[in-house]
Image 1 (cartoon, rainbow, N blue to C red):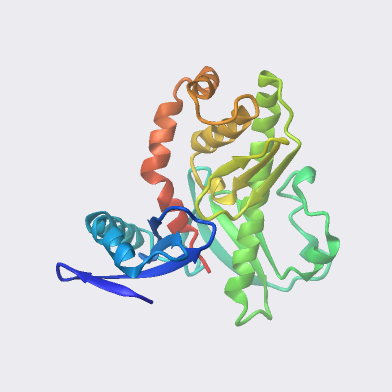
Image 2: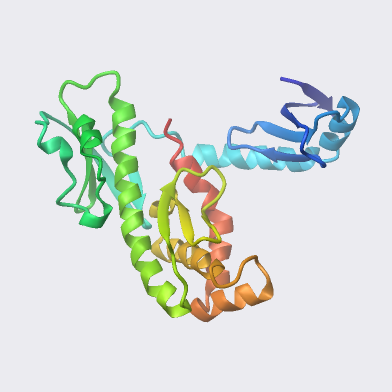
Length: 271
């Protein structure tokens, strides 16, 4: 990995050259790694000059991620850890049990039918189930599971969050698509690394599963934001007026998201 030294600061960076790019850009990832994207034949001298001009910004970003990392250490999936659900803190409880084939198709008692997976074969292969029980988020895991425990717990947790978000977001979409007289053709839950939501011109909405961890009103803002894009594409003044008509306090919600949103990427950095 290339690096440069500037004023006693060593900055390592990952360079991604591209034939298609016409300009140079840079970002700092959660692991503090600096990524530089540049046209393929950009000289090293130009790239290093570009980085040096932004040294203070890079250091500020890296320090910010380190601070967040200390506040939100990596989850170990141990009993007692806290996992949020729509802003509500839940304690994790791991229970090892014998899971007969019939039970591994589970979740029927905690999720609406429209959110269940249709693939029965995939359900039979599951060896962990995540279930809400009062103030606890319980993961029931097969008693014979050993080295694959965390991977199975992560998958069960993701299934839980995916389906909860799809259910809640689906209700919001149904309500506001009628208000705006727009059609949402599909709702998908994904694992985006930088986007909270997106919307295609064909009416397909894709949401980041981490929204299920956020306070309900923040999740609601993101969903309504995407539905509004079916009415007005782009972020022009007309678009924001449509959003404001539905959510008069959207600016406060957006401000909260900008201040706290990155924390949820760290909270969910499980793998």
